[in-house]
Amino acid sequence: MTSKVALITGITGQDGSYLAELLLEKGYTVHGIVRRSSTFNTDRIDHIYRDPHEAGTRMFLHYGDLTDGQNLTNLVLDVQPDEIYNLGAQSHVRVSFDAPSYTVQATGIGALNVLEAARQLNKTKPTRVYQASSSEMFGEVVETPQSETTPFSPQSPYACAKVYAFFQTVNYRKSYDLFASNGILFNHESPRRGETFVTRKITRAATRIKLGLQDKLFLGNLDAKRDWGYAKDYVEGMWRMLQHDEPDDFVLATGETQTIRTFLDYAFGALDIDWEKHVEIDPRYFRPAEVDLLLGDYSKAKAKLGWEPMTSCRELAELMVQSDMALAKQEAGEKS
Ligand code: NDP
Ligand code: GDR
Image (tube, rainbow, N blue to C red; front, top):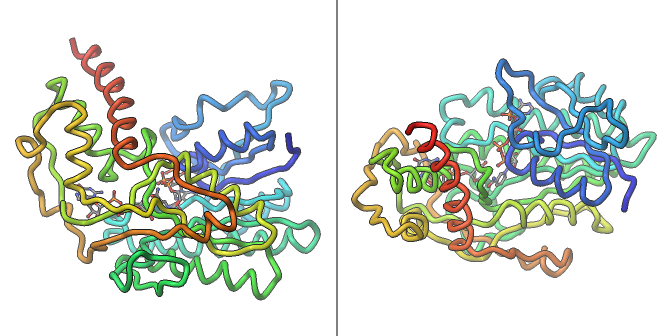
């Protein structure tokens, strides 16, 4: 068991919640930044939260926002983390076209604020930073599979902000000798995935359709291809990046790619439903620019970190369907 201290931005998100679980299991004291909201936004971490007045509590939450650099620096200097995981972001690609300036503030400048806070701490205590970079940075298809050496060609305000954050991370590593690593993660999903991302939208709808709670599912482009892995496997990779002997940039992916249609086959197929009878196209979900094909080469992470994905896309779809079926049954019970 370790006595290390970690700080996680985005702890209330999909990845933040799995990473917090992993670090607590390893003995870390975990500090997380949450945004003040008029309704509770801590659903994904409520099961691991303990009252800070209880003896032995190892998880602490602090109010903050990535757009508030002063707040981040104060928190980092206060908490003195050995490791900082910057997972917070406006992470929805379609939404980034509607709110480009905010997305750049939270996802781009937010990362710079984290790096700057880490630089201040690093003057007196060594700290390590993980930056949640994204396969969306590859954008327009230049080569496949995509690896750490593939040039970026971002196709959305979100992806542009992530490219900015990626290079600031490299810049802080080179300029200030800060241990700062980029994880270039391909899409990863789970039962905790936000319900407006396509996989979760599909598994929620398939299970609700099965129980007669809805009939139609409206989607956008069904031909895009994504390399989908399981979030729980990927947070292990994040942690390994910060345990490595030197800072570096790593792709985490499965090395397989599927269309949205194939994911529909897996999810609806698990419930013996023909998705073509229920899915309709709504152009509202098309994007001004699309990323057509993502397929990752994770051989560097495998060689240097011993990391490998453990869950296939079909297994992922099935485990999400299973979890959403329990939710749908609960909903059906409430309605009857
Ligand atoms: P989520 O959207 O589930 O979580 C995002 C988190 O960021 C939430 O905790 C959210 O808080 C927080 N957040 C948003 N804006 C701010 C802000 N201004 N200040 C502080 N916190 C903020 O994302 P994921 O867990 O899926 O992804 C984690 C990170 O990894 C993100 O940076 C994402 O861009 C990146 N990424 C994700 C991939 C994926 O496939 N999941 C792939 C590659 C990269 P709240 O709960 O209050 O909204
Ligand atoms: P993505 O994930 O944009 O890859 O970003 P998302 O699930 O939103 O889209 C994947 C693909 O599905 C198509 N699609 C739809 N998408 C949504 N959300 N809703 C729909 O109705 C729909 N219909 C079709 C999209 O056009 C797209 O091609 C995710 C996020 O987690 C980012 O933060 C992360 O960086 C990348 O993955 C890697």
